[in-house]
Length: 194
Image (cartoon, rainbow, N blue to C red):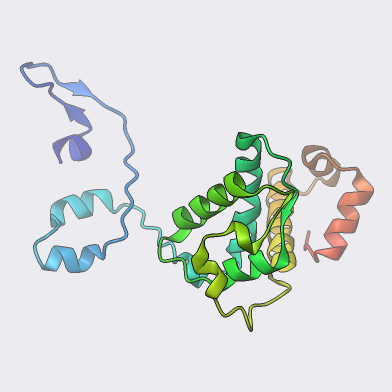
């Protein structure tokens, strides 16, 4: 606690005080308020750590992120495995969208890694996923989720790039690696306000 508060430390067996410039990033899935009330977590430590609190909803509460995460992990693991996997098929995607993800992003990551390792084709299918995905009810899972998620990601990415370049479209296009005409088409298609 002293190190966090005073930004200095004294090594064991030494008398020198050493200044430290640190930031601590802590994460938990526990309800710390209830842990403090029950005496399972130190209140003084909580208030020293809780300068900026970010709450991340579980993956089941933000299903629109699933297609983007699938693509992200698929790109990573196919390179690591040296495989020419092009995509994940519709049926497998629907099963992944229908699942509740009690293990959150880590479970999704591991599922994609396993599927990449086990698949023998160029496309991950439902049969490449663990057995639990084959029994899910995928009725009512939106078929446009992948397109919507990718458009949302692209829209946010372009907006961020435009802001970084202070609205300069030429610089933004160059940073994004596209020509100016392509940027204008995307701005119109994705309805990006500039």
